[in-house]
Image (tube, rainbow over all chains, first blue to last red; front, top):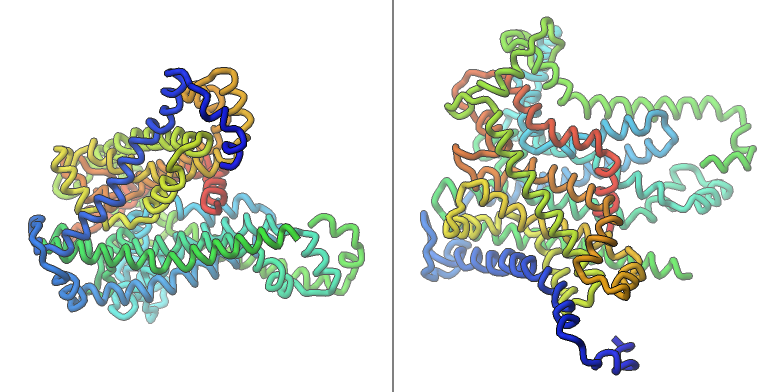
Length: 313
Length: 299
């Protein structure tokens, strides 16, 4: 910006008509995206918020009804169960995926043979849709067809594995399938970060007599923080948007034991004819996502700045 | 880590060999066990797609085929009954392709040219646009679902191919613009300046300089858009009808079939057919897939 003050003659030089038109081209190119994105994130979200404050039921109405839909929402056991499930599922899903992913990445970093082959095997689930993941795991976990029957047929008749059909545990079946889907992704991200770690520092640590465990804890893990934050952001998003995986795996059941907020939104909007309530639930989903993402994004920003700062020293 | 050879003491200590060997055993054991866990679901449905349904029901869903049939694939593709229409998954597979290909191409092209305009030209609201597309990337789709449904019916596009392509292009453009912006921002400005001094305008510079330098990000973006849109379910089920239904939405009805008769044989084949396009992309473009993961996400 300052350079333009030093050289005002360049700025004010009369331009030909074509040159001025040429300058408009990039703006014109961006314009459709700006309009579409603007409508998408401002008009549509605003519209949804307005509908959540309306008295819409089966059809969209535009009579203002205040926060009626919101208060009814929190009295609805389907919603509160969904929120509780999301909290439990999200915590377990993120902790377990990160644990398995980091463990695999550390093991893969030990100069193992067939690294590319192993990586393909660990990572392929992320390329598969949640619908396929859920359907397949539903077949495998279903006691009458899957693992339980398999072990019964092998002769282990007392084997019981009713994870998915038991109200108390069905949520853990969702966690299992989701961790299967995501841990390879975590592994690849962390492995890439591990490969970027400064090996001179690691060597120095070794010479100083630090064990492998200590080296990982003190040198390597702190320097892969930025990647861990990216991983966290992506997993948090997956968790809050959890929808198709659960539909395919448990259909929210048994009963409503594995219902999720995103399922609630869809159900209110397109099955129950409760548009205002569905819209209100969607607003909560958005608020929830931004509330959990903001601290993580801020943390990521701080970490990156600190890293840059220490890099200069 | 090969530089450790310069410190021979660490390698020559014989007493540590036993411990080292045990360590290797632990490393490989864990990797192999988790690897088997990762492969198991795919292996199970692959085997089941080759088994007779009677065998699956009698033995168990998990098992080695005692006899092999390829009929499941035939049935799943062409004549399996899903939601009372016995067409197999073929029309849904075709519908997904018809939706994914244009949506991927358009959103990638728009994303690339947007990224160029955002990073290499002085744009008055470049940072505002950047913030907006970032919000667009993070926005939960549920919050725009109802407005989209109303808007699509106003446009006369509800539950149609064009409507779904439109939804995916607009949502996808946020992703692709962000991807391409993060790549193009590292492209040397001198190249663009040189082209401009030579009298090349926006489109000429884009076509002659930017596009030839962008295949890495173009491939990454195409892979991600294709996989994402192919696998997407929420929009697919909301904005489709029995005339036009992407494969993820169709598979869900296969799964939610309450008739009581379980056709695991062709069900497995149908599930595999739905998983094939992203898997093919993943196994052939794996390098770019990983690059998109590690670079696109880290920036």
